Length: 359
Image (cartoon, rainbow, N blue to C red; front, side):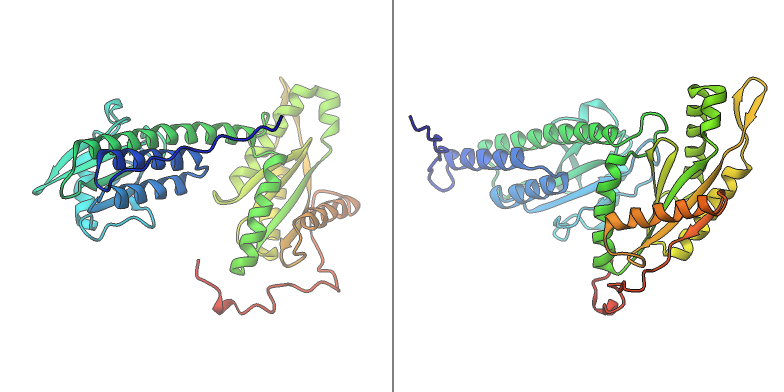
């Protein structure tokens, strides 16, 4: 017996009728449910509101994190229409009125309004204001109907629900990418990061460095003082590495007592300098492993840069790893910069960087 999918029903309605509004609402909700990226989700919602319901002015603002900053530093999301009404002056005025109260639970769901000059501004909050949140602002069309109001309310609430779902998924995904012991990123996230950074490097003509770090004399710590002491040393080493690099850089626990650092927009010379600082700070640190006992470990670090040494992400790790082993062969506790293979041609050398788009 052949099984055929039932075709999706469509609703035909007269232009301007309640049935047409209902049909547009269903189509809009279906588009939101299919979406998988928050930026695209917001953009589609703005398009639905503006074109399907004759919204005359619309803006989407990204709000600051209340736990980090209470300053009025909202930024207009690219693609939103702010020219008709929501210019910079009015945005600032509206935010000054709303920011002190947006942390209240009553604003988490639904549509609210604010009187600005002679206009009634509708606004809806996405997020709970403890994390990054967005504020949707708009003015109703010239002749709003009851069915239009119901449709817009439905779509906005659907957007708010979907945004909460995205936020929870994002939190879960972040946890999947963290190492339980050190709190650093794990090996699983390293592959995703390398894929992203190599593509960005080749597109914009930038570079980044990768440091492969292996601790020297770590096994005796485990053997003498136990694995709990060894775990504490790993946590402290992770903290040293994290404190030595910039906020924009990424630190991973590769496995065991091995770490990887990705230095964003840093060439091999900058990578070697940073590696040396990490190596020196680990060497100078004393780790408490028992009541009256201190342990000392050092590090061997290999340094490679993309695309200076290779234009393949898998090779980049291998080259930095080989540099780390060369450090071991030379006596440990040092940094080794990879050599550029004679047959390798840097893909950026023949690029006309002036013709590339500005970042």
